[in-house]
Length: 105
Length: 105
Image (tube, rainbow over all chains, first blue to last red; front, top):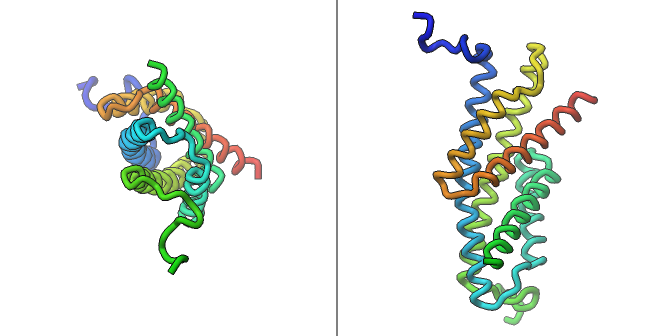
């Protein structure tokens, strides 16, 4: 019975408290990735709608509203507001990259 | 009644379909920011636990597992797996930055 469910042969046994925290992080990451997938469906639809209506791709007033809103949420959730803003920029850069890739085909 | 609930005086009226999509994006973004706030609580606890146990801050095997798992989720959710991986790197960089900032005080 030396090759059962124990993990001694491939990995060090993880501290149970560390494992508990990692399990929670993994659950949150699964939720984040699925929400991002959903978000990209909406931004793709926005891109298509703007193209169909002849609207400009960028909207600085809208973006300023989004930043202010997310910074406020971050503050109330005790998350660094600068990080929330950086996070939004990261996502928006990816959206723009997708739109450009879609536009060039 | 020229200064009521209409937005004519500050913004162009937004196409209702565009507004509907933006409302969904805003809901998703609120969820994302709140999940990120929760995630940082867990990574902070991981950092403290590792420091208390004398464990090394980085764990390449764990990180490889996280990347593989998120790429698989992304694929099944029709999100670009490369983006999911970049997203995780972005978050992990921020976690490291926080740990370093915490360690230097």
